[in-house]
Length: 137
Picture 1 (cartoon, one colour):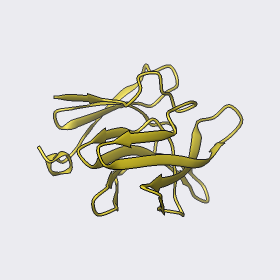
Picture 2: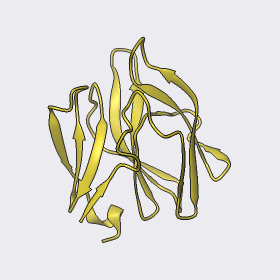
Picture 3: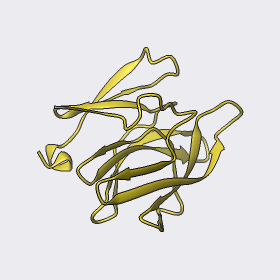
């Protein structure tokens, strides 16, 4: 089983901002570049409700059976970057996967791995094992 991004033309610098999947309407708002020419990050609205107001999310996202796999922007005192995160839409629970990267450019889900690139040119492919219960498979 392979699940790809919603729109193949999406990149972290330009992605679909309004997504309708099954019963879920997901929107990005207040999008800004993290630096000049950098990836876009913003807030999320799910079915008309602002969620995780203190968090900033990038794109593109992956959607599979009420789960959203999405890059989350982290900015702390001495470090900034992206973490892979999973939102369970039914419970609105946010799961953060360890490790911070300069970029999380999501590509696809294959079996029990999520594939993403860590660079602009899509040459540094990274595989992260994910728990099958996230995917409900």
